[in-house]
Image (tube, rainbow, N blue to C red):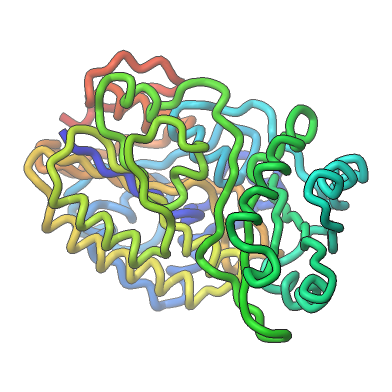
Length: 386
């Protein structure tokens, strides 16, 4: 059996029961795009996106050909790592640390000592703004631009002509070793950029250095059972390489989907797990409603190609890891429920799996479909599908 699991990074559907606790009451990424009047997603409509519990808009007259449902997040966070870990079977009851006032002096002093370079910025910042405001000084001094966000991240920006990319990765590995214990941020992120002041641009050689999940995920368990586990996009980074047998790094939504089309032509037995980060990185955080909406439209077009290429026993799941409402206040992720769409020619049609209490139910379901001894969090809904 081949299972394909596509994460539309940040494509939440609002109405999380605890949204107010995160300061996100009323956020709804999908509804914002729908209300733009430009959302055109016939393939996801065909699978059943607007039949999901409590959507309350869109075309609900068309019979759904897939299964559909809504997932609440049980973990105490709304970032990429915590969301992916949960959907892979690891609920995180404690949030990762965040640094709204910057990182403490003892962390930076040790980082400067081990890298031999000074630090600039040390504040929450937009990634494009920080290279505009600190890039010139970085190029003149060689000091590293260190910044964070509302997420649990330690980000290091450096010009590729000042700090070679492999050196930047080594600096990230140093930071990753320092940032453990009380300061164990979810991700240390290399943010390389190029160009001349003031026209700096970030490159696609970003790399995330994540914590290792605290217990085996569905990826580990499939690999241990002898299955193929193929990561496309940020999956390798999010899971620190754990549980994968093959990986392709992130090159943007369109190229990632082209890679998926290539993988569809291969014979393998196991899981292909795909993260499409442009929704979040390019449009959600930048509060770009037209851009986000168009990205959903472009994915839906690619989904049409994917569905046409599916084999009789192939399995598809589409979901998200959190929200990032481009019409909401601020620039941060938003606490939202996420959609789940599923499809296989071997499954029943039009099955509502309802509202589930945790993303981890996906991992439990995949474990049952592959008939492995799954030991992670969550409850399977595989019996509803067959």
